[in-house]
Image (cartoon, rainbow over all chains, first blue to last red; front, side, top):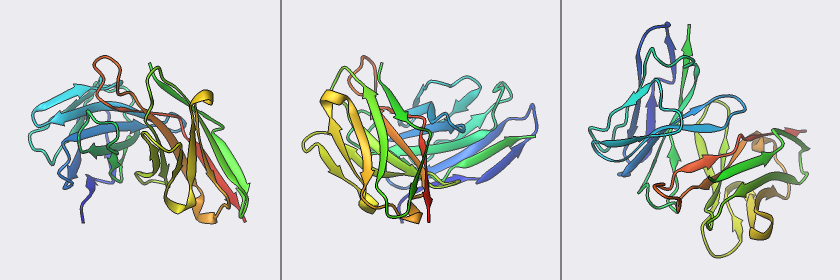
Length: 115
Length: 117
């Protein structure tokens, strides 16, 4: 079945550590996104990528980094510079980021907790 | 800039009652509007979307929404609530059309729907 997978589902991190969240899609989509979700805050865009080896900052990119070496993969690194990283992280993809008619499909999410 | 406002962070209805979740948007260009549903600790699933054409849009699970340009609204309705409808619902607008924008979605803060037996 086609879809988006995120791993791990739950992740615990000590303060000062970097952690990497995985996102893989087999939908052959060009565009991929990372969102952060906090209770009562909706979804906020961290980074997005239209094509391999290219990505742009979203609204809250500080303290995060990404790479897009393969079309299928868009990992997110939460660095120690992110002051409040505890949140639910969602990855999404769409056929072409320049076409709003194309729906974004979401993965199941990763819940990150800083101890 | 575009924005979305969802009126009511929590809505409670009885099973079998009408569900009405409100969404208002701001946009200086024709908007593309979406409703997503999220069950606890899961990702978002598309319920329905409006791009162009018919203003009454039907989605999955018996939900529908009507685009009203004059009211800048895109409210979500379902005639009869079911216990399985209990979830969080997000309205979103695409920012396509603004200088440099790439069709990213702007989300409202969500409305949690509770269904009482």
